[in-house]
Image (cartoon, rainbow, N blue to C red; front, side, top):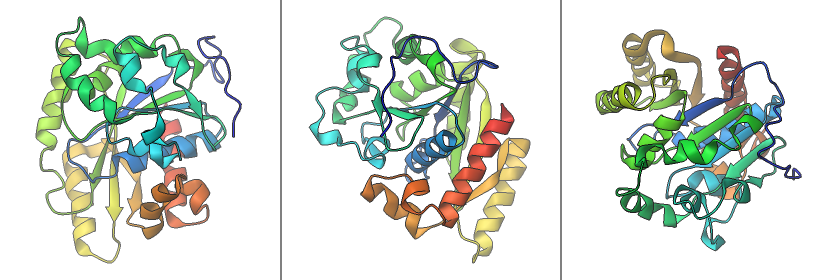
Amino acid sequence: MSDIPVFGSGIRSDGSRPTRILAVVNQKGGVGKSTTAVNLTAALGDEGSRVLLVDLDPQGNATSGYGLNKNQRKECIYNALLGKTPITDLIEPVEVENVFVVPATIQLAGAEIELVSAFSRETKLKGVLAPIVDDFDYVIVDCPPSLGLLTVNALSAANGVIIPVQCEYYALEGLSKLLESFKLVKTHLNPGLEVFGVLMTMFDARTNLSQQVVEEVKDFFDECVFDTIIPRSVRLSEAPSFGRPITLYDPHGRGAAAYRSLAKEVISRG
């Protein structure tokens, strides 16, 4: 377990570039958002990067994916968004060295309503992250499966998005709406936002369908698609119930190898 440092000092492990803030987003559920957020942060931490995972999904899957009990917490990212608690009081170390988590609880479900009347409601997360963002090489934000105010906050705070797309029928269904929201945020709130990468998930090498979907997505997104493809894996599905990323739960398996490859690709993209 890492010893939690003092955040807000602005001390970076690598001062060569600004912090990369990546929102993991897709309004469809079950495409591997939380799986990717948890396992990518772990793999980046193993590569020596200082990483903060912000769980912005009221379901709290990324929180429990690191073994943090979301049902026994009195405070979470919700309290920071409403200005009740500084984010420095919410950052928690986890089992993976260099990785820290800001947890979510079901309280966050109320934020969509409570933020509606708030001043600068679309940029609350950006303001919350401002005091500590320079302490990390990467900030990964796990978004809810919707295009509501929480996701808009993540897009406003981020400088890039990672879009997980499952290798199944209707993979591209709904992505036009996501890209429409992306363009609106980029135009009106965050001109620096970019599609950092599209990640194919739940790939089954035994089926022609998976390969066909990969080709279809590559035709649509072109060079934005990561070379790394995440396989369908029982171990990847099991790991969250043990509160461990795949790099710890099954370090020599296909899932861990895939997320280590993805981490290297993320780092290479800058």
